[in-house]
Image (tube, rainbow, N blue to C red; front, side, top):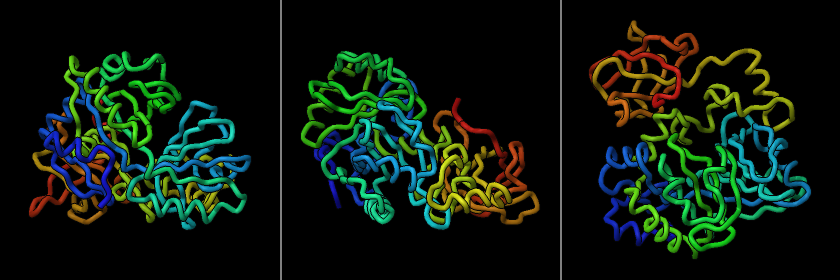
Length: 359
């Protein structure tokens, strides 16, 4: 089990620690609902240092990224980031990731913790053009400072105007007394805020300064359980639940990160799937009655036939109702479609809705 540079800090704060993607991670501190509300209404801090970071550099860096990713990274200017997918040879998803253009020929790829080795091997296998690759995952920490009060609470820690960093943009600058950290606005909660990428040796100082600066704003540490409820209320995909090696970006509703203006791995397969139409689709649903949908629960049509499975589900802390994502056959995927979720012995009626759940 790996630890982040802040593991002892979390344990000192009384966090409940659990194994996650090979790391010892804080799942909650005072409780999921309270932590969820802190981020929705104030400001909270996640330690997400388990995430992976790859640096791809050199004159052939963009060529490699264009080959392995579904989105068009050529539109990125320095200081901009992009959400994308790595399609496998059958057009399933190796991983979803964020690509940052740091310098002219330098890109930072941020990948899921559970896929670090898998992604590294996959991208390396496609690196026939000799781009320089460096795996920085073990040396860097990542804090996500999220919530509507995040910018105001943290502004005293940087000489840069944090409110000027637009969504999916970033700067390299000073923060909490440390020079040259990445401050990005690529949040996973839907409540604003930003992320701080720094070296492991710097993260304790940043963590301490963040909590000093945020004290009067009610800042709190937040665990991975609330991160999951927050992202689900926005309809953001979680790798291993809503997307994996067997689901294509088109089936997952991620057509917006698939750009056919370039050739990339499995692009011809995805082009054919787009022309033929998908047979299953990831949908969002709300329960019409009481109940909590969970991963792998069956989704039924109104005649009781199995038409799919729940991939993510929870009791929404903001909406106070059961919500979820799941794949269903295409003829049940339209917004407004009536379906049912098999929860133990009961088929609980539900309605397909348009994302996000939380507005």
